[in-house]
Image 1 (cartoon, rainbow, N blue to C red):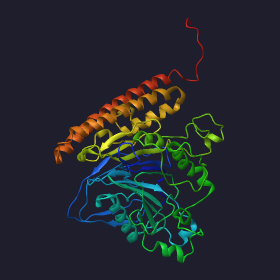
Image 2 (image 1 turned 45 degrees about the vertical axis):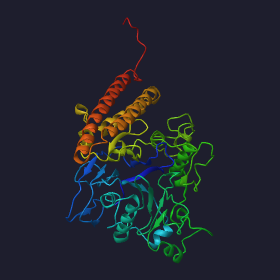
Image 3 (image 1 turned 90 degrees about the horizontal axis):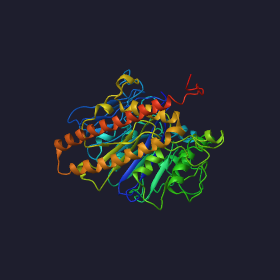
Image 4 (image 1 turned 180 degrees about the vertical axis):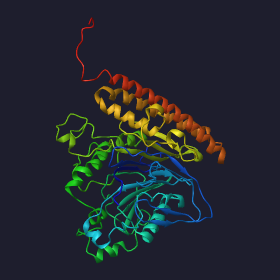
Length: 480
């Protein structure tokens, strides 16, 4: 079965590259259609019992360890028995390991001819989080865990998977039925990619920063798969380099580098744009939020800008109307250990809607995020997903009229939510165990209510303002 989620964009930043020493891992979750309702869920830990994971997309059934940690997820809503799959997408487990899955990647036909994907019963995106996140204590350990799963069951598709903890970010690319490479993002660097094989030169003498599937070097050598005269470039060996890539994939990578390194004149069609790079300034949470919601602003390629009609549709933007969630997994070393793992989540189009924080230590989710109806209900608009979708649609429908006010709204949201995280984490510093979990859960529920009220007020104002912008109008004599 074809995978549901296929177009995503990723941005990663090591702890020495960020303004506050955080590790930050961001990704947009983009789907084929404009609507794919999602919710936030906390899966409980379990102990000493049999546990298996079943895919809704193929015949995969994975056996799991008898003990599993609590973890967050952002799954599809329970619609028609998960006929589209679960797709937990992102979250932290109780040990502080973050996972975001997946960035879809596509291998070339040369390598797939020798190691095809196991589409019938291999692990795929809808179960990859459930098979991995409950069973790891570190980002590196998560790579090892997923590597064992791939060795046992094979992979049903090509996937890029992000793992993070307070020290490390690992990016793992599964490209064929059984082969993969993972690279640790250097502490002083950032990385950006979108739907292409990203990892470049692999150093097999540096196991601290690279991991790989058993036998991958022999697989490449025996089947004559390396096109380069020198070196071992994972992207060149396993990836694609097509005209489609130049219009759909490489421009997103180019724009990430343009934002971080505006003085470097990269080409948006360059197949060899760097995956990992460095910048002369510290990267903030706001920088990553901006990138994930970007659409080539200040270039001719902006669909909402002033380029020619041809330029405005030449490249696929980063923030899309079909971005179902955008998230940033942040571990802040300057906050108390019991409140420093934060998933920043936007369930609207990140160009227009806010990122809202979720502490991983909170064990319950407020109804506005935990309960998402399958359809928009204007009579009872409590769902964060539908509020943020409606906000995004309203702003885009009158972009030039509403953009300034929306920017002011997002700035106010960032200021207040950043402050809320700092104050809430400080208040949690002396709390432990269940007391801490209850405190963070209650504080988050109250914060979600405030955000919802502000969002609905702005939507109402936009809708009333829109009523005066109809093209079916005429200048009237006020005395008539």
